[in-house]
Image 1 (tube, rainbow, N blue to C red):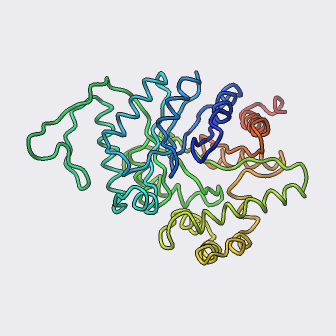
Image 2: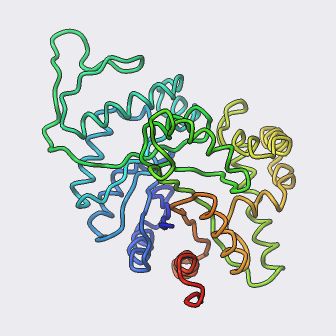
Length: 353
C-alpha cells in the first residue's frame, strides 16, 4: 500500500509547524500529502507553498469543493499546481454539503451528481488542451452570444482525478470516471457498501478495480496497554458523534448514511437525534467501542498491524494516516511507527520487525 496523510492550513493553526510536519513526513517516506478545504482556508494556496518545500511526495487537493469555482477555474488551479510541483499534483474533488455550499458560499447544492460528472468532463478537456465547448444540464460554455470557444493558454498536463464519494450514485460515478476514490467512514468488514457501487461504475466504463486507487483514511494512535486503549477509544467517541450528528443538516448527513449502510443504522440515527437536540455528551455515549475500533487504526502495535493487513487485503491501495499526538514530535513518531508497519506488510516474513 501507498501511504498518505491530510493536513489543513486554517483555524489559527501553526502553519510553520504544519510545514515542518509535511517536510519531515516526506523524509520518513510518506508518499502523498492531501490538503483539506472545508470552511477555513482554501487548498491551492498551501499546496503551492508545499510544492516549493517538498521534492518527492505527491500533493493533492483533498478536496476542492464543487460550486466554489467554475470547472475551468478548477482546471487552471490544478494545471498551475502541476507545473509548480513538477508533475506531482493530484486533483481531489468533492461535492461537500448544503451547509457549506449554500450556507457559506450561497451556491445551490442541488444536483451534485450531474455537476460532478460535467465538471470532470470539462476539467479533462482543459487538461487535454482542447477548446472548451460544452452544453450540459449544469454548465454551458461558452454562453450564447458573442463568445467563442477558447482554450487556456497553458500547455496540456496529465493530472489524476480523485473523487470524494460516500453516496451510492457518487460512488458509481467515481468508478466510471475517476482515477482514484477518496473515502472515509470505512469499515473493511462492510466494504461491500462501497465496493459494489464502485465496481458497478467501473464495469460501465469497461474497467476493473486495478485501475482505481482506493485511498482510505483513519486516525492512527498506539496504545501501550488496555487502560490507554480504553482512554483513546473514549476520546474518539465525541469526534465520531460529531460526524454522525453534526456534519450536515438534520436531514442531509452523508457520514451518517455511510455508517448506516455498514450496519449501524439504529445507533447512527439515535446519535444524530441526540446531537441535533444539543445533547453532545449523550450522543457520544451512544457510540460503541466497536464503531471506533472498526473505523480507525487505534490500538496496540499488534492490533494496528493486523488492521492494516485487513485494509490491504480488502482492497485499499493507499492508506491515509492521521497520526495522533500532542506535539510535532509525537505526531511524527506515531506516523513513523505506522509507516514501518505498512512497509512490513509487503516484506518477506523473515524480514519483518
